[in-house]
Length: 208
Image (cartoon, rainbow, N blue to C red; front, side):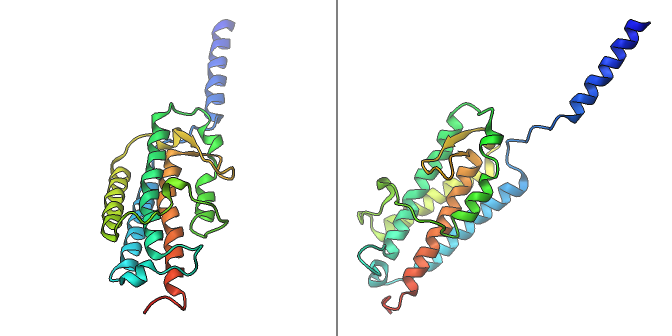
């Protein structure tokens, strides 16, 4: 009888302890996260295309100073960056799930939202995504539209556990990001450069 009672009490204790353990977070996108990313991707795309529609060659190529980018160069950088950043999503997903993803990437989504669109800090773009002027305006726009369509389709359809897969960022401030955060990086980075493009157009010497 005592043995049976001990077994019952142990079982109840185990159940109580299990119920008190924190539940592991779901590594998949929530409906709210998916909707937010898709809207941001679509809104930033529209903002860019509206901003460059109908510009003359003089306006497209105008540089506020030799060290600053023109509208065309900003647009080229945005187009090239889309491929690089989506590639980071793919590299993260190609790696094994990170057992410490929750700890490593905690609060990183909020950090990205605070720094990227608000243009906090300045960084040198990697050489591979610096504008070189080797693409025509039509080629830049077509490249951007195709890349963004691919990104949006992925965001709409993926059911992968994005948050469980991580990839280190070259900037120490971000350290490690998960694939969901790398996906969010795309429109947030784009918004940052849409603001840069707007600054070029607002310059007093911008061609009329």
